[in-house]
Length: 278
Ligand SMILES: Nc1ncnc2c1ncn2[C@@H]1O[C@H](COP(=O)(O)OP(=O)(O)OP(=O)(O)O)[C@@H](O)[C@H]1O
Ligand SMILES: [Mg+2]
Image (cartoon, rainbow, N blue to C red):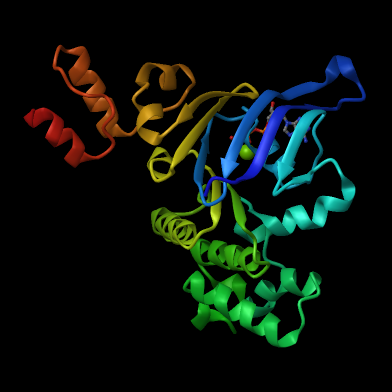
């Protein structure tokens, strides 16, 4: 648990870097480490650089400055790219853009097949991945007929079948209805409990609350970092960064402002009730 799976040092990234005058400085100097088995949430308003960071971790782009080390491998070194993508698989926002086959099990097999996983093992990996996301009984279905949450679970199964240590999810619930969202959140929690490192980029505060540590980004930098309690208790700072905090935390904050001596570090109704009783 103490080993870092991801180390980011002085990471900068500019889009259109060949034309310095017009280049967009998307990331301006990020330092962070993520330990094996951690559940990380990344928050931040639109355009602050979350997806840029995710693509850099996944070695889809390389840093303009600084380094990203995934499981000991630098993303700058081209020969590491496939090992890095295998170690840290990525799930995107739109499930429709991630499904490639016309039958669920073929879709899940696509990644490991490309990695050259041979037959009895391939079968086993696909079945296990589908069971993990509770979609095994749909293995012969057409992905096109599934709900958004089910499609997204198939996309997660496709990543799982490649045996990653880490799963990086870039707003995987943004296009889903509340049911689909809770399916994905449940799946992510389960994967973390089974030992996968999770990096969950989200706009939903109640999803970030589940993480061990939360990073809040703003304008290409990490502005806040800590447990969900520590981060959300900074209500004014969060608002300044264009973000909300969970309703319960906000209520505690307002009670505090009105002169009640209440701890701001509450995330659930029960915790608030305990505080009020004191
Ligand atoms: N392909 C690109 N070319 C040029 N600029 C880009 C490109 N992609 C992103 N940017 C810019 O980089 C900055 C960071 O964008 P990024 O997509 O990483 O933000 P984000 O935090 O993921 O936003 P969102 O919450 O909307 O998904 C923004 O200013 C954006 O306009
Ligand atoms: Mg994004």
